[in-house]
Length: 279
Image 1 (cartoon, rainbow, N blue to C red):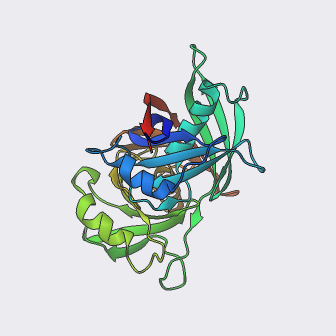
Image 2 (cartoon, rainbow, N blue to C red):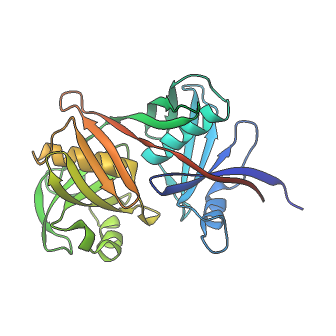
Image 3 (cartoon, rainbow, N blue to C red):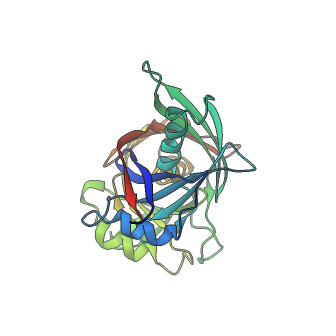
């Protein structure tokens, strides 16, 4: 019999990962395990795995492996779930914690509910700024491109990971499965990109669907919601300090400070089930 590993299946707006506490253990070849465990027919089923560890620079560390085994820089939905995990399991009593990620240190504000468990989390996502791409002057902001949805206004945003926000007329009818994988690997993005299909509903509300780099279509993407709100505010479509981004799995509140470029994201985090799996 192989060594059994305890895991917790969690999701933020349907963006689901398998969470493993590696503070006192080593998980061999997490990239390979992510491919195996993420399989929704032969494994646990998820968009990937997230390892929660120690850090010399922050309260905790987070490593993210997508369903295809690639390592991600940051995950907004995942970071909220990490906040709930460490608080609900008694690994911290603080409601303000720091999280060490490949895209830098993130600050989390944890909001307990009446039952003492974490109900929602606000994440300081860092700066939301234009992304340098292999295109023209180096950035892509508000340019009309033909990307498979007809002439489309596009903005590339760096949220610690790369995003292309495409403003479409109808997000429900957007060809996410066809256009997403093509644009993910467009030559503009040497490290691939997350692709957002965004429809502005009013000054405070955006409907968005997402193709995530390394995972495909997902119910939600925290960094994608932030990138979408930033791109929309930059172009004057929505107010920067009060924007709700609704995805297939639910909604996130996003605010962006045009002066400091800081992005704050607030949403829920949920435990689905826990178990053990043999290596």
